[in-house]
Length: 283
Image (cartoon, rainbow, N blue to C red; front, side):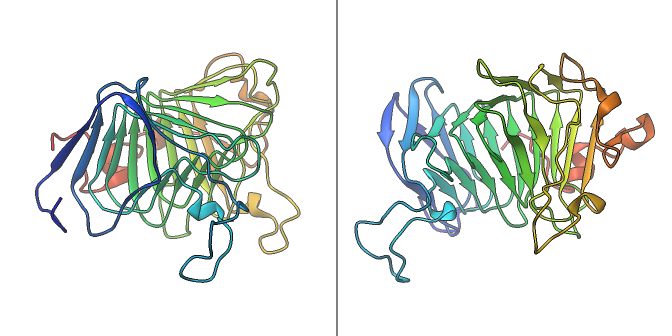
């Protein structure tokens, strides 16, 4: 693959289990990695935060951090992932990222992103689009700063905890937006929050989302006790529109969350959220 490619390069992956730590660096752009079938094309890893390196890395670190625990890291802009399972099988040992995205205009279609704590990290100022994906995890398993749309995705909680932990910056109009998604849970899971603010200006909105009974009536958690960022609920933006299902009774939601009006809903289009980038355009 040429550096800084101006045309899309398609890489097809045969069925198999690939024990990899896959990195698409910033200078490798316009790459599409297309699996044969998501259930049988699996990229797997098991690194986790605090796990020892075989030797110290170039900067002197002796252990993995959350941000180096990934199975797949995407840093090149305009990349697509399709028909893949990307998993971190470290288990419940703390932060262990399956997919980390540090790039702009990234599409993830028909993929399973599987892990426990911190499964999916969406970093920096990127715009990401997830379509028809399964994302599983325990605590804060969708987290980060990017502007991200999840369309027709299934989000599965594996334990009582929090789904999202956005760290949206004050300058961003949008953080995480879920359209027509489904929230489900493993057996025995019955106390899950939609999200909590990792940083003060976290923005997360669920639109026409089916919520099973594991979503607690309060909906959102303020993340109290953070000495660096107290009272985050005063600046976070958490909202819903036409949630439905057993966990969608919004009458007991926290007072600092919102229910969008039809007029407010009109600003939640892909063009409003992503600007000039149309993730549905043919590449």
